[in-house]
Length: 339
Image (tube, rainbow, N blue to C red):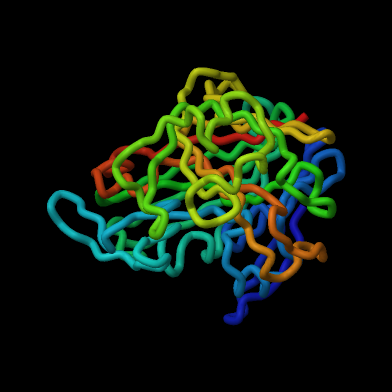
C-alpha cells in the first residue's frame, strides 16, 4: 500500500509504503528508506514521526538507512590506494553516519513486490550516491530490500561501485518492545553473543585500537540481564550504551534460506525479538535523550528505546577495512525476528 506522506520544499513528494504478513506490518518512507512503523500484533514497536518536516529538521536518524559509512570515522579523511579523500567532521572530531548529508536524507525509489521463492511481501529501495558524495569516491548504487518473512522483518543490503570506496550500511531504528506508548527500555531483558567490545575514547567515541573483554563489565550480556542494570557504568559519561559489540558468531540460525549469526535476543513480557545478521558487529545505542519532538504523539523521554545497528567495526576505513572494489558486491542481511 502506497500513500502520500509529505512534500519536500522543492516539491518532490515523499511516500509511505506498507507491507504486512501474519503478525507483522512495516511502513517504510521514501525519505531515507526510513522504517517509520513496525507493528507486531498491532503494537508499534519503533519510534518514528508523523510528519516529514519532523524527520527533516530533527537529528537522530530514526529508522533510516545510514551510509555510506555507519558509525564513526576519525581523522577527517579516508585513504584509498595512497590517495586521501577529505570527509566531514560532523560529530565533534569524528565523521558520523556518512557526513552532513547522508543516505538518511536522500529520496529513494521504492518498488512494491513479492519475494520470488516464498511470495513474501517486500519493498525494494534504490538510490545512487554520486562520485564525490560527502567526499567518498565512486558512483555507489545501493539497493535495500525490506521483506516480511517467517515472522521477521528482513533487511537485505546490496551495493556496487565503479571506484574503490568504503561502505557500511545499517538501519537506525529505535525499538521498544512494550510499544512506544508504554516505552521504557530499562527492563528489556537482553542477551548478546559477544565476548569483546570496541574500546573507545570517552570524549570522541572513536576506537583506541583495542578491544575489551566484557567479563565483569557493564558490557557482559552473555547471560541475560536487564538493559538498564549496569547502564550507568559504561564509562562514556552518559546513562546508557553507545558501544560496538563484536559478535562471537557462536550461535547460528537459518532464516529464509540464509545462514545468519544470532547477534542478540531482547525480550519483554509482551514479546521477544531476535537480531540475526551476517555482519561482524552490532552497535547498541540506548542513550536517547528526552529533548525533541514527540514520536507519533507520544512524548519523547530518556530510556525510551534502544537501537541495534548491525555493521562493521567503527573507524574500519582507518585500517583499510570495509573496502568495496569495482566488480564486487557489498551484500549483507539483518533480520529482526519477533514472537
